[in-house]
Figure: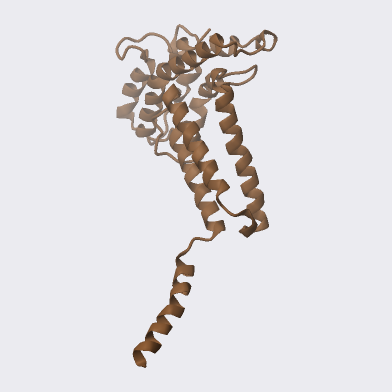
Length: 245
């Protein structure tokens, strides 16, 4: 009898244990939010820096066809996960958040399928203007910060080359901005073509150093700042010379 009662007690307890171990729809949704956000930060080091995540402060984004395809597939997977969450079991706030999130994911999927990445700039913004704000939007308090900044300057030609290749793909299929709205776009590039690197906006951090960058490091950092990123040796001009146009 004692054994029988024990089995009954165990049987009654099992559903309770299972219920405690199961993940609620709201928790699933917030876990999905967190994982998708982490993926975006990993894919966009500039975004990560902007939101005070400094794991990739020495990197720039990579926009090869393989990178774009991977992001597209991961976004589709996130959307599939979202669609599997029962909305009727969410709070009103989470239902609203889920609807906004779904729209964002669907827009990213549609953007890739449409090929908007083949037009990486418009009349007033683009990857090249975003990069020109780098000296004012990254940490520059220590020697390591400066070395991270220099690493991004050196990586600029690689990123520009990838964007140029995407634009060429767009031209082949007629994906271009209307000519009228691009009047003056060359000024966002030619403004950074200088003969003297010290006249460049990218030289700004080397004019005055913070106390976190010791005097012993400063001339070396300045010397690195003067170097052409295409050739790790001679002092030539600024990496902005590699901007298209």
